[in-house]
Image 1 (tube, rainbow, N blue to C red):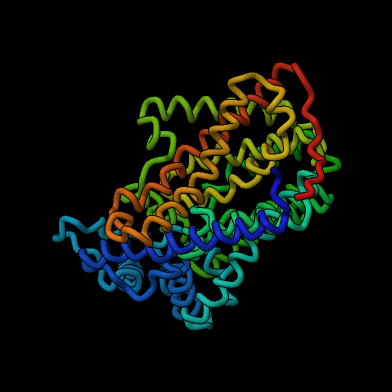
Image 2: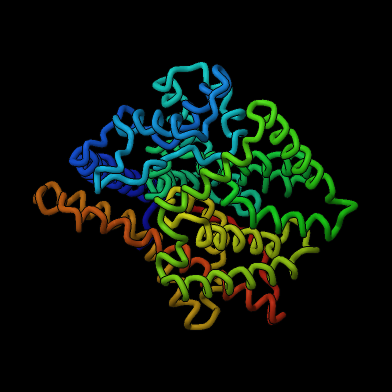
Length: 439
């Protein structure tokens, strides 16, 4: 029996309630308890990922302080953990833990917020980030020319905002959510023919270069393949990058060397890329190279396609999914927001998947389970906590709803690879994704 749209919406709200309770009342308190045991409880746990941008931006613009020095790192640590890292404590991370690892223009772009106290900044971001994340989903639907009913869109937005990566990003107030929204806006601008604006937004998104470098290469290849019509995208990107670098150099001469040093140090206290984290160093490197080759192949094949075609959308989705498994730290689950286009692209190709091979259908089922796992298991843990609080709050149980965060990008990539290989072999054209979902 098919549920009515209103009932599905109510069910989605109940799932959101259960997932939110799990994250904010079960998982986060356990994390704070662990930090307290190591005397690492600062004032700015909530919004902790945006705090270094706010602090270093104020110090740079108001006092000319270099954000890449050890003294600034100590100030960041005191704000986040209540004290600097101590090399004499075996449990402490390295002394450069949570050093400022953004380019200087991240501070410049945050300039409108810098005069505010951080408590006020957190309020602004608490409103801005969920709105931009929801807008990003709507824009990806438009980029791929997919139409859904108001009920379906509301359900999708609700589930997106209570997904584990987004909850992590919202609590930490992570710049990755802003980058995800900027990429969605850039893609929407491309499909509307506003290429100069698309290039500008792509440059702004480079505050997290690990999330955009592969997409930039693909879009520059796409631009060069029809230079006369698409050159505005390159002009917008390079002009904006030049302005950002010039402004950064004026604000802090020689900033590139400091930024590079912070990036080198960053790798010492973060997890390795997902490929190596999940598959090991050797197999992970091989798998990463294989995905890069496949991405290069589909981008080369699709380089002449217009932006409003399914082939262009497939290339963009695949490139962003590959980016997730290759980014330098596998623990940045909040950056998985750039998997939204892959999920959207695949979600509206049910007929092609059902008519595909048995491995494709099985993999699609696994992907559906991997996506829904976070909500179903989180709600299960929430229900159990009402009757057995001690068991539900144990560390092994609390991390169970997050177990699919690492495998999900690989499952999505594998499913996308079926379509990529079929296109490369020339076996079939990709059906255009226009669809109308009623409920």
